[in-house]
Length: 201
Length: 199
Image (cartoon, rainbow over the protein chains, first blue to last red):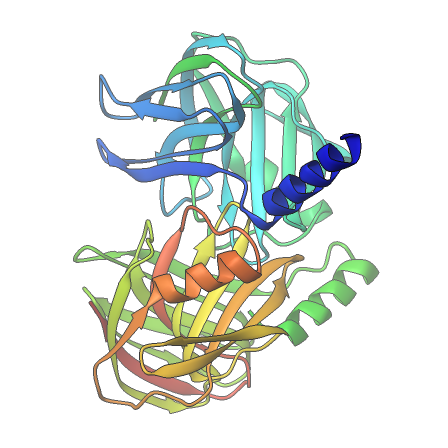
């Protein structure tokens, strides 16, 4: 009986690896801003725009393995990102200026609340704080990940001067840009449920 | 993006981390269509977008040059296109874009050739495509390369779903699509130009 169960498990496992991990998400524009969600696992992530403009409300259910939602600009650029994360409830992992730059295949984070890490590269000072700079990988491509050592406050206006980070990356990690696919403020969670309300400008 | 360039980048990266590849480009929207250029090396690539139509030219001396138009955010769509001409130096033309989760670059090449590790073949739109997996910036490339070129100056269709379904079954996941474009790439270093339209 045990052998049969094991065999059945092995079959399920091989079927599971042959299938794709469940992934969902949406992208579009609202109020002149780009928005996106991406989520994996058995839950889901939704985004809504009760106010419009740069504001968004995101919520993710329990069961999500990874959940991202955010709003900003597409095409992206090296800009001063103003933001206010007014509300962060439940399970969340990080709030970051986030996006992609395609040559090389970079996923980037400038983490303002919560933490992101990888292989430590150095530190950069910007916007009244110090950030640890890390290099990570996603699908074997590079991630440039800055993490503000002391979290920014919830419910206050803040600025991320991207140029300070980009200049550091280019000097100490590798190429970045000129093409930037997205520049968004993103809230990421590695489980749920949770919700957020944030605005970018 | 070209592999030899990547190798050079990797060597440059390992020997002198400060060394940057000279890279430039532009992106934006014209009458509802997305357009972009990207180029490295000595020279430049110029694009004149007009909705779904564009003309582009690239000078000699470039290590890599890409120019295209299409849709951003992208989607798995049936792409109609017509390349009125592709002159001078070019290596690949067809559908092209990126998908972030996982972070990959994708090609469906209808003219010229892009290759990598051979995976299999897929039949679509009256032709056979070799499917390859490649590497860009350490991340994956999903590549379908039509075994016989399409014709210049005629309307053609790329049924993306046929390729995406094959990729998902035989290479790996393919999710949110950042952009879906028609694009001409050259990595041979010569000058050239093109005029294409998508719908």
